[in-house]
Length: 213
Image 1 (cartoon, rainbow, N blue to C red):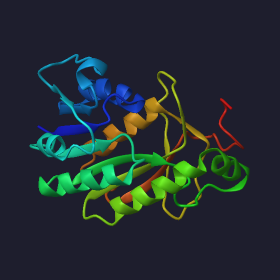
Image 2: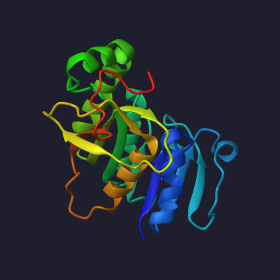
Image 3: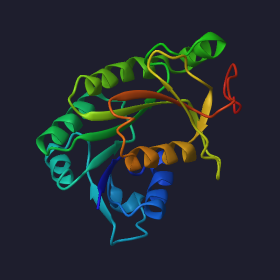
């Protein structure tokens, strides 16, 4: 039985991912977050373990990796944290990392939307270019998710993927769809997502900006 460590388990994507993992898989979950005990409600104590910790807390991070088969990282803003996570995974022989990052880190967002996106999140793109490169330079079996602008829509799990070197496909994607993609990657046995950076958007949203702006 697979054990998945969710780093940033109190985040918004994680809030959709956790119940769907419990519903769609038999995986055990380690839920890692600052003040996890007060921020996360456990629905299945037999499968969910809460871990209070910071990404810069090496001892707690290393302990959390014990017995883990795959890691989902909900936030890739800080290079020190990302390096700590890579080191903890290496030390504990954990190979699979799925990391959520932002669109634009490969200069792949073109046209009017690309200009708007850069004007809105240029500093975020700059930081995440550095953290993405650290993951890509590691020996981990990673999948980076370059996410379109996020919103919530129950029942909408539609996603479209583009690969490195391809123009980004659309402006937005639901957090529910991202959660489903993460489950699909964790369930994949073919390794088709291994060591890839994927653009993630909702089909048919190739607009000048997201619909909610």
